Length: 154
Image 1 (tube, rainbow, N blue to C red):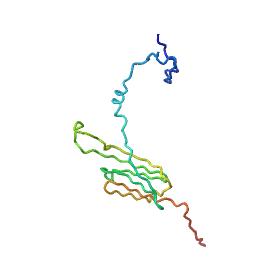
Image 2 (cartoon, rainbow, N blue to C red):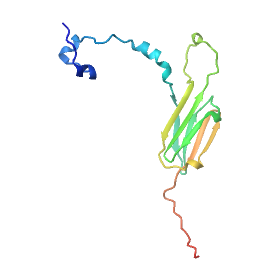
Image 3 (cartoon, rainbow, N blue to C red):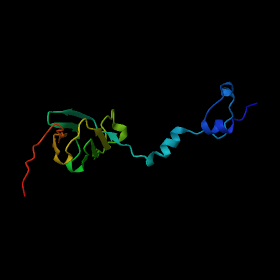
Image 4 (cartoon, rainbow, N blue to C red):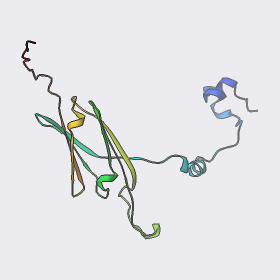
């Protein structure tokens, strides 16, 4: 006869090793594939944008391929220590699924947040796009820069 699992075992999903093969199912079996298909609409998949990040003596430079996205459809948010690029790429093809041999291109929303290696001046950033390549140049804060202040007598 099968032993009923304790409340703790049901709550945590744990199993006594000696009873491993003798568990009684308390609830009916669930087909996970059907559950995932039925609930597929509640989660929007967001792709991750591929980027190159490097520095020059004065700037942090970020490059990303955003082919198929108009510049006015991109959102770029920069803080002193991070950068976020978001956008959406629409598929304009009307080819039926049955006619595809391979599908590797990403269509839909994408986003990428990057922790920057140095503090930057967000309001002095420059973004350009050419042939689908987005290039962001963000000036680094020069912590070594010193200035002499002249004192005015009033």
